Image 1 (cartoon, chains in turn yellow, cyan):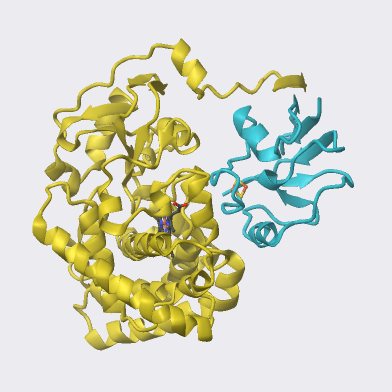
Image 2: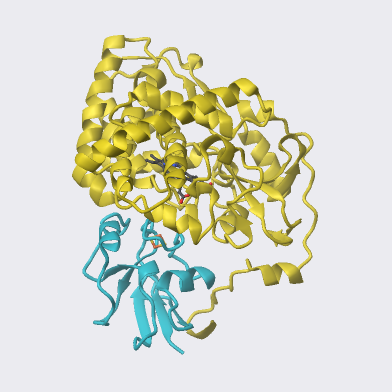
Length: 415
Length: 105
Ligand code: HEM
Ligand code: FES
C-alpha cells in the first residue's frame, strides 16, 4: 500500500506493528515489577497500574509469573494481531475449568464457534426479543429489592439476580434458576483462576460443569420441539461438536453474568458518589449510554485476560521471547493518561473515545450489545426513576474489589 | 491500483493506493487514517467503522448483520451509510470515496 496523493501536511504514518518491524528493531528488556503483589492488586490496582505505565508499557511481574501489558497502545496492538499474540494459551486453566471454548481458539477454528452463536446476541434480536424480557426481569428483581427494604444490598438483591435471569433466558436454560446461573458462573470462574491448585475449587468447578452438561442435555430435546431465540436453541440444530457447544456455553455463563452485574453496580456507585453527574444524566436521559461507557472504561469489569506470544517480538519497544505468557490489562489500558485527561476520574461528560473494556479484534465481546441494552437502556434509567431517593447506606460500607475481575462486592442502599 | 479516498469532517482528504480486495476499514486502520476505529476487527459487530459512501457506486447489498449494526452507529445513519469493514475495492470497482463521520463511539 502506498500513499498516492494527499493534500495536507499530516501524512498518515504506516502502522509500526508488524513482526518484520519488530525483528529490525531490538527493543529493550521489560522492567521487573517485583514490587507488585496480588493482595495489593486485589484491593486497588489503579495506583499500581499508574506507576507501571509511567515506567514502561510492558512489565515482567514475578507475582503472577507473566508479563503485564499496561499501556493502551500496547494492549490495542495485541488485540489486533492474533498472529503474534495467540489466544490459545498453553496450560490455560480456563480450558481445564470450562473446556476449550472460542475464547481460547484462534481463527479459523475460533470463527466456526463464534458463527455458531448466530443472531442471538445481535442488535435486531435484542430489540425484537430480549428488551421485553429484560424489562420483565427488571420488574421482578426491582420488586424483590423493594420488598427487601432499605438496607438491602444493591448487588446481591438486584444486580446479580437481574443479570443472571437475563443470561439464563438468553442462553435457553429454562430448567435452571438464576441462583444456578450465579453458582455456575462463580465456581467456573474460580476454576479459571485456580493458580493455587486448590482441590476444593476444582471440585466445585467440576460439579458445576457436570450440572451445566446435564442442563444442556435436558434442554436440547425440549428446544428442538419448542425453538426460541436463545443460544442453546440455535445450537441444538447446528452441526458443531457437542464438546465445543459445552465449552462455549460454560465460557458464556462465566463471561455473561458477572460483567453486566459489575458494570451496573459500579455505575450506580459512581453516580451516587457524584450528585452533579447524576443530575446531568437525569436531566438528559440520552446520557445513560455515556454513563455506561464511562463506567466500563473507568473500572473494566474484565481487568485482564491472557495471550501467548507466538514468535520472539517487540511490543511497544519491549522485547518478548517466543512463548511468553502475557496478561492484557484492560483495567490499566483504559486509564492511560496519554489517551484520557484526568483518566483516574469517572466523568461521563468527558469527550467520547473508544476504550478497550470489550476487548478487540477476533475476540471482541460477543455480548457487547446485550450488556449495553440490559444495563444502559433498561436497568439504569428504571432504577433511578423508581428510587429517586436512592443512596448508599452508609457510603463507607460499599466495597469495590478485584483486578482480574473488578466490581462491587457489597453495596448496601436505602431510598 | 485501486484507490480509496477518505474525506474528514475537517475537509482534509487522504487518497490511498491499495491492493485488490482491501476494505475501507482495514486500509484506514493500517495507514493511520483518523476517525475509523474498527474495534471488532471486521466482524460487523462494533459499528466503529461507519462511513458514508460518495456517489452511486456498485457495492454489494448490505447483509442483515451490516444492516442492524448500522442502526447502532454513533453518527446518524443515512442512505449512504456503510460499515467500512464490509466494503472493499477491486473486482471492477477501481475507486471508492467515503466521508468519515464526526464520531464512531
Ligand atoms: C459489561 C459487560 C461485559 C464486558 C466488559 C465484557 C468483556 C469481554 C471481553 C474483554 C472479552 C474478550 C476477552 C478476551 O479476548 O480474552 C469478551 C468476550 C466475550 N464475551 Fe463479553 N463482556 C461483557 C458482557 C458479556 C455478555 C452479557 C455476554 C453474553 C451474553 C458476553 C459474551 C462474551 C463472549 C461469548 C465472548 C467471547 C468472544 C470470542 O471469543 O469471540 N459478554 N467479553
Ligand atoms: S470493524 Fe467492527 S463493525 Fe466494522
